[in-house]
Length: 264
Ligand SMILES: Nc1ncnc2c1ncn2[C@@H]1O[C@H](COP(=O)(O)OP(=O)(O)OP(=O)(O)O)[C@@H](O)[C@H]1O
Image (cartoon, rainbow, N blue to C red; front, top):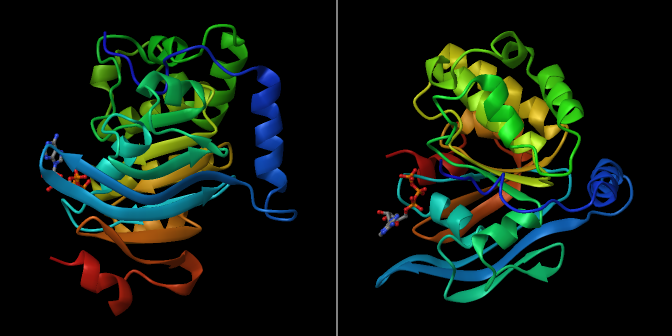
C-alpha cells in the first residue's frame, strides 16, 4: 500500500493538537497566527523553472484558495511545501520552523496533511478501514472515527462498502475524512472538484466547508465560484508567480480582475 503524507509518522501530542485548534478558533478576535509562510520560493523540475518567487501565507483557521490556469504551478506549490519537490531557493516556514531541507514524512509529522488530486484512497479497503488506517498511532481511533462520521454521515452509512465502489464525490469526502482524522492542523487540498458532476461538486463544497470548521485549508481549485465561496482569501498564480491576492469578499468569479488570469 502506498502511504499519504496525511497518515505517516508519529503524531504530535493531543495537547498540541487541542491547543492549536483553540488558537485557530480565537485567532480572528485576538491576533492572526501565521501557520504557513512561503517567501520567494523557486522550484524546478530538472532545468524547468516552474515557481519563480512565490510568496504567500496562511493564517490559522483560514481557508486560502490558490487559483490559476492549468500548468501555472499550483500543484508544484503544494509539492514544494510538502518537500516532495523541494525548492532550490526561498523559505517555507510552518509555525515559524523551516520546512525546506526536511523529508516529506517530517513535514507530515508536523501536522501538514495532503489530499492529492488523485485522492489516494485504498479502493479495495472498506470505507471504515480507509478511515481507521489514517488515524495516527496513539490516538483514540474510536473517538476520531466517530467525529469524522458526525461530519460525514454518508461515510458512516457506507462504512462497510469497498471504497472503490463509492461515487467520485463520496471518494473525495473519504479523502477529506482521512485528512481530518490525522493530526493535521493544515490540509493542502488539490483540485477537490476535479472530474465531478456539478451536483456532486455541491456536496464536496459542503464537505470542504465542514472540514474548514475543524482545520485550516490551503485549497487549489480551478472552479472559481467554488473557491471564492469557500475561501477567506485567494492568491492567483500565473506562470509560476503570484500575480494577485486579496479577500474573497472583495471579488466575484466574473470580475475581469480574476478572469484575465483564469479564462483560456
Ligand atoms: N514531474 C514533473 N516533471 C516535469 N515537469 C512537471 C512535473 N510536474 C509538473 N510539471 C510541469 O510544471 C508546470 C506546473 O505544473 P503544475 O502541476 O504545478 O501546474 P498546476 O497549476 O497545478 O496545473 P494543473 O491544474 O494542470 O495540475 C507545468 O508546466 C507542468 O507540465
